[in-house]
Image: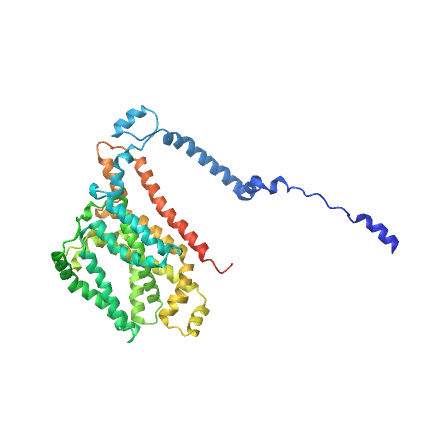
Length: 432
């Protein structure tokens, strides 16, 4: 035993090795480059090719962007300042920024859309962020009526009369809640529409004759630029989500008639291009209204855009509902919850969390599709860029306008994308 011990003890280290740094290829920038850009021959080729494209863009577009003119009254003056050298003429943005943002909205009333934008951000805060006090949701409910009056103006009693329609519907819902949920919903819808059809107009006229309060009326043809894109986009986004939820639930309903109506609506809308619906809003919708009815074109477009987005939203939410395990529905039944409580407390929160990427993707697509309104005579940023280029002062300008428009659209869409990622991280509680 002693011989064996003496022969093996020489192989046992009795001192610790000093700590050493990892190899150069396993730390710092070199490690990141090796793992992310040069992890294989294909990635290495793609990285080199991408760097070549970036370098080509820099050497070709960089001097053009760096040699920029901001102070000029026309393209001719801008070219005279450049004196034959290559450079961008962003003076057109400085000269026509008000048109690109507000269209032909009266300059003395620019404070109204600016204030509406600020109040919209305040109204969205309690909806988007849980840290904001929940009591601010009351302002979020009132903002659509405040925003409408700020943008269009006219009698202040018009949005109040429309708001009272929802109040009447809520009172009818509460009064019939003990009968059954179906009867209460029908009573709420009927009460709201009866108020709007027969009492809203006389109420508005009577109150305005007593107290003529309001802002100067602005016609819809004065709207344009990013103002009209934001109005249509935000309205369509806000309305399409609840309608899409109802359509998705209706498509999964066991009631044959309700399910058939929802399926036909969704499949018909998804099979028709948006531009066709916009032409319908522009030309045909008035034929379905009573004679002599004047229905604002922007409101008609908002209705059609909302219907279009709701159909796609319904399918996105239906995918979230289909991804839920059956045990979630059985758990709601085991707790003794009725249908609406189960949807509100258990099913729909999980389905919406699963469908967040698809929902935000639909929102982004809808906001970019607002540029299609140029085909029905509404001057969105693209339409105004064509009008600006038709002016003799700026005839021939091209890239500068579209770079500015594309940058603003990117800011809005990138913001929505980043918020969706923030919301996904916040709601990802299953792997904590």
